[in-house]
Picture 1 (cartoon, rainbow over the protein chains, first blue to last red):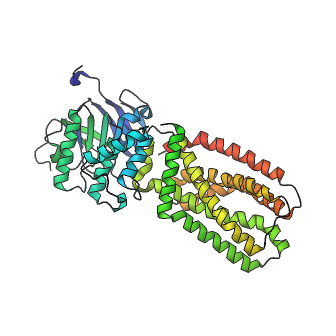
Picture 2: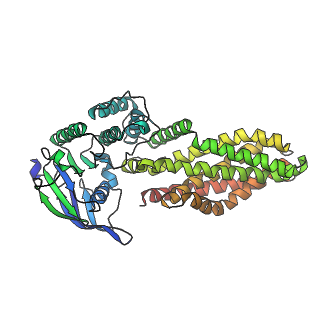
Picture 3: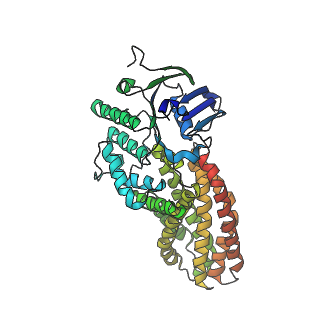
Length: 227
Length: 224
């Protein structure tokens, strides 16, 4: 089946997410097709991170439903989802390789294969797997890349990335953007929240604009004047 | 990966993190040492008096020291939101819970092993009853503290003042176990009565609360 005819990989139907009285998502209706790279844009507080966390299954909608990879119970498909959050999701006291080996274990990657898989993931983000330094002593940019390596460990079908380029130097960010494009070309679906959409302009399939907890526009090109 | 393999990997990771930082074990040792020294100077008990008060003293020291390690356990998972990575994985919630509980059990047992000779020296302690019974009392009592402690530390994880919340939640529910530990230890030290009833109480307490914690932990972990 051609990718464009394939059923949506994510379907959000009237998703509302409230934290007390504050509504972070105010009725999100959206479908995301497989094998495409979506860039999610919006001001601070627009609901981008909450949307990503809801798709990842880390936050439950207050109202509405969300279906990911055909499942409404996201825990059942979590092994096919990779998630890179704003915090690193890594233990500062352990080296990058130690961190990844631990998380590989959680995904059921056998110990014999884990070493190879983890080293490959670290190399793919242009870091040295033999770096014998705890993650806490990494620069912010290195930590971001190690966090991306962790998200790639389980070879996910759906990759959710929250601010992957923050604190990464321009050259490394461009390399990461190219890497994300390659992942899309391999058939993965990517949802990338960023304030630097220009980096993804050449590889993105669609730009999704959010404001005040709603998706307000979807465009195939960046609007003029966007940074 | 199997339940046991995830549990083993998480336990090994926690032991490694504690070995590198020594945050919890140092604080626990310092606190217990203070209790031993201060109380021994304050009371100057005879051997006879020591046998009567030591049960309570020892367990109060271990209970308060355990709070330190219990608060530390989940704090590590909150830093950098690592707990989210665990929640996103297909690994079972209970394998995380049991790994944490066993990790805390090891830390507190190590503390007890290090502090017991000091208690014996400072309070001139000697058991008149069967001393071997202190081993199951320590094991069961420690498990009672850490299994509930690990669970309630997870509950208080997202509260603003979790260091205060944990004792508030843990102490009331630990009263039956504390009664069992203190009375069983005193019974063995004084030799005046059998500790069997209190040991049975501890076994029942451990079984009931371990099962309850395992049944409820996934809900706690997934709570926002």
